Image: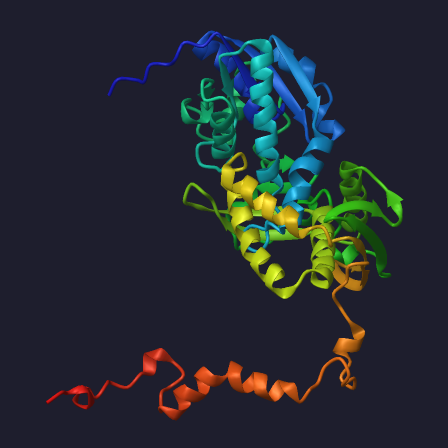
Length: 423
């Protein structure tokens, strides 16, 4: 079979992190496409150490320029907090740290391509993962005219060891080694770990792998308390201090990490069909999600709260699958936002050795009425009325029993068709 002919590319904007994969992509693009390479780096809270010296490294690798943008506040306000208000969690555990950041990065990747007059964009996501979908669906949604280059689906490099060797041949300095070869993604919301000994899900993660959180065993012996205030579902202050969205997450990351909060070990179902084993650290996000749920339990009526739980599952699936810039996600946001008006108040939490414990919640829109809930009060709740309600609510069960039918449909007796014969 003849090799697929590469499209003609004049200038490409590469989503650049300075890590192993994107470091080797710069010389590879120049060699294989003969194009100018502009590197784009998004500061989404991955840490100053990951950004230090990035421009020099990109230029030494062959890029014509590096464009860096600080997107931390945009990530927090426009992606993480809407996700928080929706209650989105993928497969009961994953708080979607990487998933939420990818559409933001891809959005600005497109904008930078427009800014520099590029005809293509490129990313370092592998052909086996979810990120390739998230990047490319966003580009397709925002500018389908841009060509997309995914080197991992084209080149002969098949492992991180191969990539390290390629980098050495092209004098590109990288921090990854064959001995310690975890694949990590870090941003304001979380730190993920994959690869290495985690490729066997029987292995317990080594403590030295964790970077955002202390182990519960080494957490303080005394519990810590934190108060978080919300306005219309959005966190606005921590311990009485009003902070920006990104700063709230940073502060709670430090508080939660010190108490061993937010560690998740998950075997998840990737969009591409395979399972993967990852470990996530999301201390601040875990605290915020817990607090938000506590406040919603106080102020939302049952029907809305229960339906919102269904919406949360779909919202998480859309985010995980790279479908952020879609009509359905916008429609779900409209529903979620319509529920968040009363989600205003303060939640107090106790943090102790990896556990979050409710220690109080208050709201001016609370639907909890002590006089209704108190067993002894008859003026607001006539307990004798419950008898009629129970009789009507259980009527179908009563009819079933009177007809001699079992509870389980699997144990149904064979029908007697002779009863239905006509003369």
